[in-house]
Image (cartoon, rainbow, N blue to C red; front, side, top):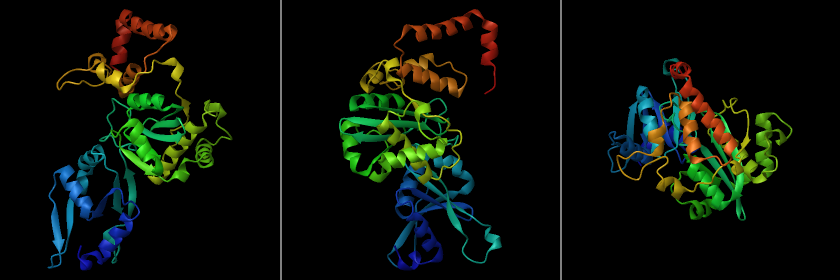
Length: 343
């Protein structure tokens, strides 16, 4: 890159902000556009199909640029996130007309595959889970959070059991200790979007303090997870990550629930795939979920998906579900009135 370009006030400001989020594509607001530079521009141009240009100072040195109008953010942001990219949105923090110096800019949102509340990014028929995993010898603690719904779950068990949970919850992003990425991939494969955090984040004192601060409680006994020390570490790591990504409006996360593994049949990823419960192995085919899903609300769609990958073991709750279905079959007027409710 040209030294002359790099030393302009605007680019100095860009590099200062970029240094705080080196692993994210930085959308840098300049006037009516969001601009990307250097490698970010190369990646953005390829993913978004926008023009990649180069700016120089008359020498052989240059910097790559790619941008789009600011009002098109809702069109382009989902494409970047779905491509597995972390995106830092840098906005102008003051009116350019009110200042004669360089406009103040700052990160207003850090969007990652597992942390988003943007309606254009989310698929409302499935949960958008962020996951954290803590390795301890032959067992793991694990936690799942859907920040859009507030559903916050925790469990721990053997690596085989955790593998089944990962297959069933299908998290969009997984947090692991920086020193454990290779271990994660050896046990669970490379199909997940992984983000590494410093090992100190995965400590019991740090994680527990963060959870107690959020829930404003003296302990976690009321949630029934006090004994799941490794799962608690994973859950606390998730809240730390929300702090890092500047997601502070999390008052709707009001509980932490244990995944009650004894209630469900454990389905591994090969069973889920071969039975085509959620997706099909053949292009144009239909999964069992495609056939069954006649739900009329996002909540219903997510619940049905969960029921398919977590089949019940006990007869009583199974019969309770069947009784509800039978009731609606018998009372068609009630069925129609429920279907017509606007969500």
